[in-house]
Image 1 (cartoon, rainbow, N blue to C red):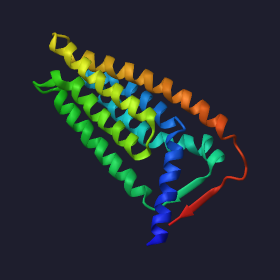
Image 2: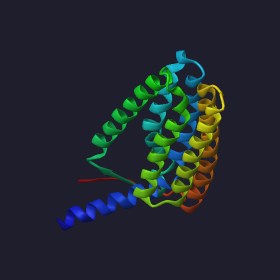
Image 3: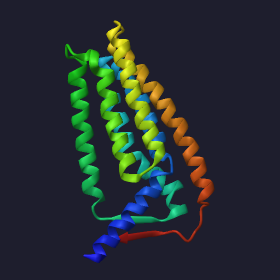
Length: 199
């Protein structure tokens, strides 16, 4: 039992450290920017899938080159199941976005997007106790309120949603770059950090 508690603490600390590298934030911003054109043109649904795929798979690829040589790598057996849960959740989210976009209630789309993205950001902030995520989550939710007001005034929901995602994407990329630069300065690359499998 005590060994399991220690393992959970190691995993939590490792994930918390990685959350500060800024890569996930940068990729989230890029993903939002890529997904935005879909809200201008229904035929660009593949961009939703592309943006989501980048967010799911790209952080791990980049961390192998930029982060693990600095802080090491701890592999936990549960990672695969968590990745599949994330993929399934995102697919369900995309399906609902498509349905909502073509529905008569699409005027709530900017608010719905902010609600879902904000909930994800608040969950990350709660799990890793990082103030930056709380700030980003609040900003995302605020964008939903502004977007709702703008669409109620008669503006096209798709255009409002696209602009919303582009602006949020730009903010996320900027914040992520700052975090990434600070991270690599704090953790210079060394040869002593290798891969370690736990569990």
